[in-house]
Length: 171
Image (tube, rainbow, N blue to C red; front, side, top):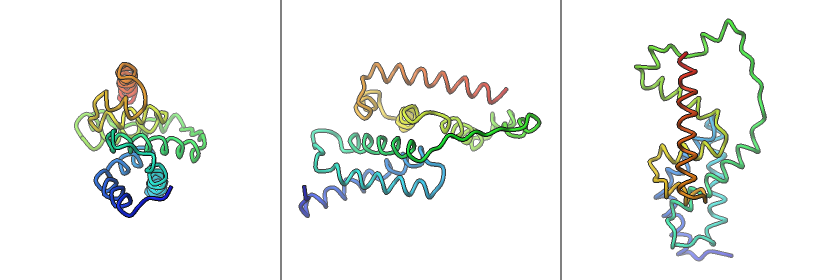
């Protein structure tokens, strides 16, 4: 299906209004600038292809998040190979942040949180990304296609898992 000039303009305006979604998703799923750029381009392509099926009855941002997250998860699966990394025992202390720095330096806390997020599977990254972006449970449920109760349960478990991991990092 080909879009009319008016439909193209509407699409471009809506994407421009919500372009932050693409940046957030790309940054949440890719660590390098090049990968973020590639993922952003892939998201835009899929948005363009899917736009003829978009229904204005739903919020554009919800629709956009759903597509962006699905593309990001597929992108991550396609481009990630399991990597085994070993660290000599005598170097472990150098790898972990100094507890006093982590407790007081906001940048170090953000870096620690980013490292922990990077260890999550793609779906849990999506949950956390949406939660940290202040979406309601209802909005998260709409975007991910699950119930609000399921969102609440999964986020509760995810928060507890992150607390446990933060605790381990500090030990």
